[in-house]
Length: 117
Image (tube, rainbow, N blue to C red; front, side, top):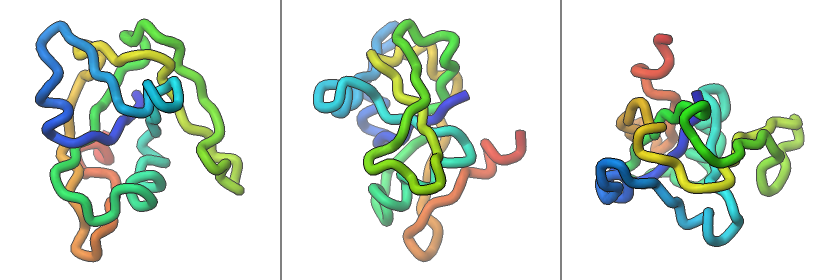
């Protein structure tokens, strides 16, 4: 399982049978993703306090594009790698959508719906 952060509206705009295309696909050539242990890193660095976010739970086996585990930008000094999807994510590859609310201090942690697995 890999996770992608997006807005509820961005996800709602993907039609049945369609594909999700993050802006980074055009800019960087891939869609930034995380795993459950690392998703708080980009969430708190890039989306702190932003409302209306969800986590797409993606089954990489259902994605037609290559998924590569690579350094973030900038690379994490601890050597943490992140999954990057080098193409659109088919709607049917998203096996669950989880609300991704902020904590009272504006930060984010892994939603309980994912941490109990």
